[in-house]
Image (cartoon, rainbow, N blue to C red; front, side, top):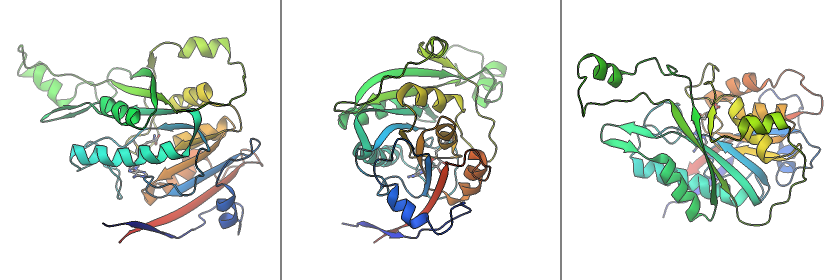
Length: 302
Ligand SMILES: C[S@@+](CC[C@H](N)C(=O)[O-])C[C@H]1O[C@@H](n2cnc3c(N)ncnc32)[C@H](O)[C@@H]1O
C-alpha cells in the first residue's frame, strides 16, 4: 500500500523574526500559553497536521472547498473529483481534526449543498454523518442567508425558468443559503466562564444568520469576516487556539488575531501566501506581541 511521507521544507516568507522559524515552529507544537498571540500558516495538505499536538485545538472554524464548483488552483480537493472521492478526502481531514481537538470543544463547518446535473449533493448531511462516525455530537445547525442577488440576480438556470420554460416541473432556484454545522468533541471541556454581552447574544441566538458575502479579492470563495468572528466569540476565550484546515484567503486567521486568539491555518495552494499575508496584515504592526510563522511543507507520495 502506498504510504505518504513528508519532506519538511521549511521556509520563511517575510516574517519579522529572522532565524527563529524552525525553533518557533517546534515551539508552536502543542498547547500555546494563553498569553501567546501566535499565528502559524502551514502550506500543506491538511489531511495530515503533524505541526499540531493532539488535543490542543480549542475551536475549528472552516469552509471546505466546494465540490465541483470553484477552481482554487493547486492540488486541493474539490474540483473535478467524483463525489465519493471528495467525501473520502474530506473525511481524512475530519479524522485529523478529531486528533487535534481538545476534549469537549467545538468544530464549526460551513458548507453549501452542491447542485449538479445528476441531482443535488447533500454535503451538509454527509458531513454530519462523517462527524458522527468520528464520535462528534451534532449540536447546532445555522443557516447563513446571503442577500438576494449575491450570485448575480438571476442564475442561468433560473433565467431559463423565467424566460423560456415558465412551467410546472421546470422550477429552478437561486441558491442564497449555506449551512454552518456545529459539532462537539467527546470529553470534558475546560473553559473559563467569561460573560458575553447582551447585544451579541441577541444577535446570534437565532438559527438564521443574515450576513453579506465577503468582498475579499483574489480568492474564489472567502467567507465574510462576520462568520468566524461570531463563532470564535461563541466558542473560545482570549488566548485560546483556533484552527482552519482549509485556510483560503486567511479570514479565520485575521479574525483570530483581531480577537486575540492564536491560530493555525492550513492551505494547500502556495499561490495564496501573499494574499493571506496581505489580508491578515502580516506586515503591519498590529501589536508588537503578535508573531506570524510560515512553514511550507512538501508532501511526497511513495
Ligand atoms: C472554500 S475555500 C476556504 C475559504 C476561506 N474560508 C476564506 O475565507 O478565504 C477552501 C480552501 O481549501 C483549500 N484546500 C483544498 N484542499 C485542501 C487540503 N487538502 N488541505 C489544505 N487546503 C486545502 C483550497 O485551496 C481553498 O483555498
